[in-house]
Structure formats: structure tokens, C-alpha cells
Length: 512
Image (cartoon, rainbow, N blue to C red):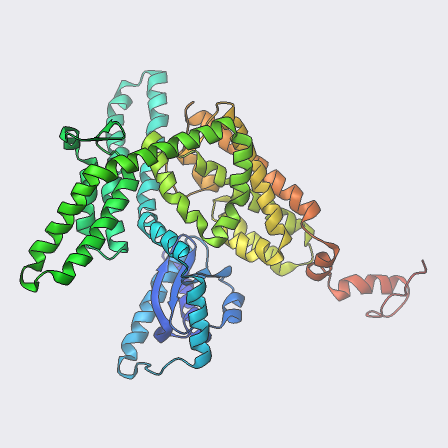
């Protein structure tokens, strides 16, 4: 075990060491982070990055450019590579501290950097990115609590069905563990929102805590005909309150005397933002959150097939454009309201379409050893819901298979939407996982068993539709000629030998 662990550690350190000079060295790195499958690097001078060499590295599954330079390494590996990469960057900076690079960027490098920043700094993208930065750090806790809630639901059914009183006495402990985070999620959203918008995180949390405070029921105020209630407005209200507090705090800092700024600024921000939260934000955000829930129920209950087809079919393009980040607070709001989000299992069907498409590509490109190797390495991650390796390593570079993968996902979403419309609902108790990793998080109105069955039916439909659409419509004759040409020796020598020619001699052209 130790030797295997050391081998893996050495492999990830080598990968980090290989990648660092390819992105321009430690001096060219402004930030190092990672998500579930990507190493996300802030790059100072884009012209120093050697894209072709990075893509050719055996551990790299693809490259994505957004506000950061993102190297797709796959789940598991990315965390270890990111840690090793961060250490190498820090060591490199320390070693070159006395000779730091101070020269200005060349004109071409400056132009490339400005163009990259312009493309990724539109107001809409910046806002969505900030929203994602608020909620993404909460995903690990959402996943953990969601899985524990699922286990609690299964054990509750077992205890009730078999009369296990001892087990029933243990269940409140699990319920407390799974529900505690969700009861205070608004506070965590407030902390992250204040941090993201330039305020003091704890001040944002203090303002957001007003929303979950039980004593708000004693506030003699109504808006839209609603009296205030604990958690009214939920994460949407908490996010708005913390953002407002951050702006108030920054404004007050400019005029407050330095000697008493520590007393005046946070007090002013909490007081004003708190009053606005109680008198306006809680009611408005509560009205919006209620509308989100009603709209989702109506959409899937009345037009489930159409809604599922469209949402799942368009999800991959939304991911490519970064627009899927707008759905994160919607998922979180639905989880707050009913314990699960019915949108996520439908959107997860996009990954099923990718898996089916990859299997079809594997069979169609039987002579393309490099592509088949990529599929073999990326398919397990795709089955577990991590789609980037298949997207950036297989379907997107080929073009048409990306479209047929979307079609496969659309059919999977339509099946889930149809079953939801018929009353068999499935939802996810957390955001983040998809594919097979979503099974432990599924729940619905009819219980976990029905929810799992509905989700499985959608996945199977997505696999089949993605495979069929890609196998029959994912390749033109020109694409097959380009990507699936057999080796010259394998193609010509048997025919030449059959004609009595020397090996390597081109076969005679048959008469029509």
C-alpha cells in the first residue's frame, strides 16, 4: 500500500513539474485552484503558455480557457496535482524573489492578454462567475449532508417496515447531522457573498443570519400580504443582504475616521443592511423563491416531456458558455423548499448523452488508437458524472458527435420529464454530482425507490439515444476518412499479397 501510494504521489508530482514550465514557470502564475476535474491557473502572460505541449501531455485530457487557464486532469488526480503544482509555484517564487521579472509585456503578449480578458469580462459573465463563486464552495457540504439524508431515508423505511425500534432511536442523530447545515445555509451564503463582493465575510454572515433568526416573527411588518417568517427569502435573500452590506461597508470606509472606523463601519453596514433585509429583501426574495418553486412544479408537471427535452439538450452548450452558473441559486432554493431539486436529474441527462456518444465514437473510429485510448480513460469519469474529459477530449474536437451527444441527453431528459409529468418525481438532495454518483442523492414524492428508478430510466435512455444518434448521424464520410483511416500497411499489404505483388505495392484499381 505504501509503495503504491508513493508511486501515485510521485506520478502527480511529475505531472505538476512537467506542466509548470509549459505554462511559463512560477513567475507566470498568478493563482492556483482546482475544481472536481480541472486545474485552474491564473496566467500573467498568455503568450508564454505552450498549448500544444500541454495538450500532448499524457495526463492532460483537455484544455479550457475562461477567466482562468483550465487544464482538465480528471477527478482524483486534479486535487493531488494542484497541491503539488501550488508547492512548486511557491518554491519557484521564493527562489526567484531577488530577480523577479519586472519587464513589461511585449506588445503582442499585452494584446493577447487584453483580448482574453475582454472576452471573459462581459458584465453577464462576471456576474454569473461571482454567483458561482458564492455557491460552489458549499457543494462538498451539500453533497455530504445530502448523502446522509438519503441514508436516513432508507433506514427510516427499513425501521418502519421491520419494526426495528433500536434503529429508529438512532435516526434522529442522522437527521440532525444532515439537516443542521441546511438550516443555516443562508449564513454561509452570506459569508461567501460578502467575501466575493469585497466586504468583510463575517459581516455578511451577520446580516444573512437575520433571515434564519426565529425572532423575526415578532417584527410587526408585512409586505405583499405576507408576515415575516424565519428563512423567508432563503439563500436569495441572504445573498442580496450580504452584497448590500459589502457595498455599504466599502462606502462607509471612505468617509469614516480611521481612529473609530472599526466601530462605525461594521455597525453602519449591519444596521442599514439589516433594516433593508427585514423591511424589503426578505419579502421580495421570498416572493421570488416561491415563484421559482411554483414555476418548476408547473413546468415539469404540465410540460414535462418538452421541458426535459429542451433543458437537457441545451445544458452542454450552456456549460460551454458558462451560463449554467445561473442555475446554482435556483437549485439551492428548490432544495431549501422541498428537500431536493427536480431540475438537476434532468440536466444530468446531458452527461448520459455524452457517454452514449463516446461509446459510438469508440466503435466507429476502430482504427484511431489515440481517440479510443482517450475514451477508455475518460469513460469511467463520464459514468460518474464528470463530463469534461469526454467533452474536451472526444465529442467537442470532433464536432458533430457533440451535437448528437446533446440529442441523446435531450431524449434522456424527455423520459425523466415524462415520468415526472405522470407523477413519478425524482430530484437531487444536493448539487454537484451527476451520472451514477447522483444515485445516493435521489429522492422524490414517492420515496427513494421510485426516484432511483426514474433516474435510472432517464440515464439508460440517454445512453441509448446518444449512442444511436452518434453512430448513425455523428460522422460524415469526410470525417471518417480523416479520423478513421486504417494504417497503410494493414490496408494495402493483404490486397497486394493476394494479387501476387510485393508487400507495400499499391493494389491495382479494379475496373468498374
